[in-house]
Length: 257
Image (cartoon, rainbow, N blue to C red):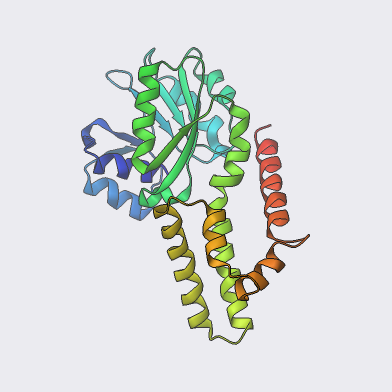
């Protein structure tokens, strides 16, 4: 995800000479990307001639406490810390960066093609200028939404952070249903994939809501209505989706403890 943000920023004109990447063992593809853009990559940043304007923390949450002490030594009074580490609250960063501006953000995987959506929350130290800087940074990979209540990031993660996996699983299930109905595996997969992609494009381009678009596809007593009667039943898709988001929300809160 950090690489996606960096790629988006470079595409928008960021000078690669302004970037330093701390990565002890970059994957070959990442190493090639950084080399192609002549970006400094080091296993550890011990010192800088001046504090960075932004520290983007894009690491797995399990190693946050290993990474932050060294980064905290680099920060200055005007440094903005932006975290995309899932499940780690702003309080974690404030322990290492006291009186420092911190923005916690939750992007999702479509950010890798600059089609993501990110929800961000600032701490009390973030100035309007720093918030605009964070917005510019995060918007390099898609839409940005700001909230003031950090507790909302758990359901946000459950809906948009995990949401792409739900869509991919829906595609799998639709293809499997087609195979069960007699289609070849290749045709079922092609139809399911193209239908999901085309429907998403239609939803994006239309001024109508998802409910209105669904209604337009559904003829009374037709085939779609028969299918929706199953999906909308007492134990149908809405109930399952609500339970899934609730489970993901609860798990996010557990990971933050």
